[in-house]
Image (cartoon, rainbow, N blue to C red; front, top):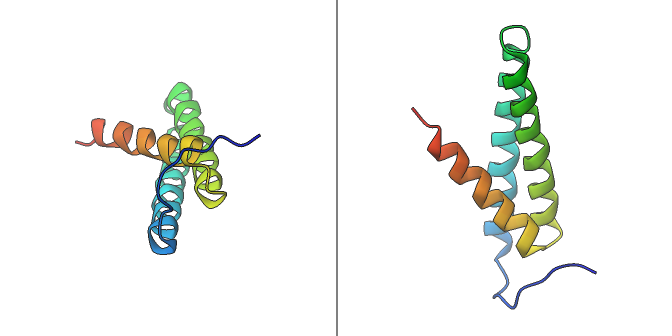
Length: 85
C-alpha cells in the first residue's frame, strides 16, 4: 500500500525539476564520497548514504509518492543548505 496525501497533483515540470535536482545532489555527494574515501572513511560512508537517500527520493517523486518522495527530498535539501559554507 502506497502512502498518499490529499494534495493537489504536481505539474509534470515541477516533478521532473525535483527529480533532476535530487539526482544532481546525489551525484555530487557520490563524487565527494569518492574523494573522501582515503582521508576520512566515515565521511565517505555518510556521503554515500546521502546518495542512496537521494535515489530513494527521486524514485518516490517519480512514482508520485508525496510522503516519502517529496518529503525526503525536502529534508535532504534542507540538510544540504544547513551545511553550505
